[in-house]
View 1 (cartoon, one colour):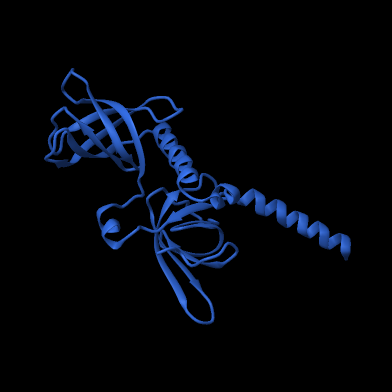
View 2 (view 1 turned 135 degrees about the horizontal axis):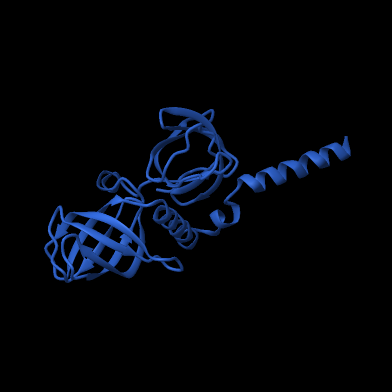
Length: 223
């Protein structure tokens, strides 16, 4: 089900124990861009409730932060899970990657190789011929497209009995550089996976300021 919203709508977001008015900047399927007036900036993966009301009804959407703001003037991108089942299984939005990654189980000298299926700011799903077990701690050498390789420590939290094995890995230590790389990669994926509205309208804070300044200038000229 797509969000029945339009750019320019105003409503409220409940997030981080705050309730703030927001303006809708962009809409694409189940993804929206909104202003971010919160005193404490949210992080990717944070849960949020988006509320819009008119004279007929109140629309209530359970969302999560896909792209978090870096500065108070930035906006943020929210996405609604495709289903309640999906939301129960995963706390953060994931994007496909399909790339080869090197890893090494801590305490061992022999490295392994895996193919990443999808990734989020919290972890990844990978396929490898190297046998792993639940709770294994591994060092991942994450090299996202067009970015330098980053060392990330993770723990195996899911194992599927297939060959090659499929393993869910939860990030335990995510350096700031790796987090920025992941956020940038996910933003690039958003631009590729969703309609052009987000690419055209986001980031919208600077554009809105320029448009408002132009509108004010036009009003002053006609006054």
